[in-house]
Amino acid sequence: MSEKRQHTDSSKTSSSASKAGEGRGNKVARSVASVVSGSFLSQESTLKNFPFIFYLSLLAICYIAYGYYSDDQVRKVNQLTSEIKELRTQYIVTKDSLVIKSKQTEVAKALLHTGIKESIVPPQKILVTTDNLKNEIGN
Image (tube, rainbow, N blue to C red; front, side):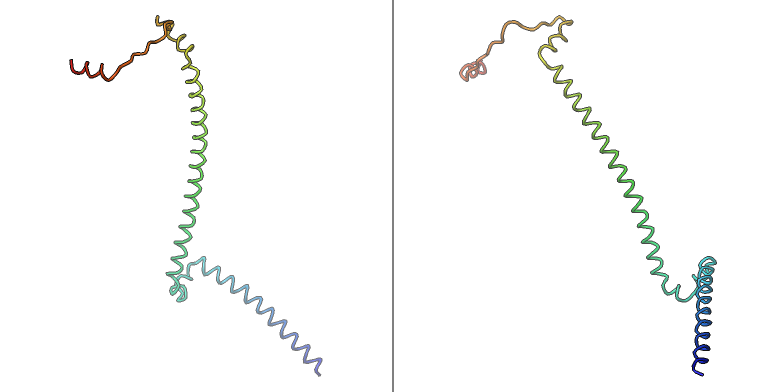
């Protein structure tokens, strides 16, 4: 008799497990249908938690906006980095050109066609003493 009881108990548990599995599938389907139709918004539990849901939505929007903002900033930093490299290269080339053009021989060559020649006579030092300066100012 105990064998018969075990057999009927096991059949009851298997049938209740299958009902629970059906209930889960049915519950998921009802939840999805509730979300799609929008009827979940009018439920009491949803209305109680509406400020928190609104806060989470706002937080998600801010998070997405911050992601776009940071991507934009990364692009700007990369653009400015490449611009700095380009300007540094231009600076080095210009500085090198200036060093070459400011050599005495290059300046003499550039002024040759204007008729200005390099002086052969060395420059003379002009000495000014304080006594001479006072005499000049006094006169």
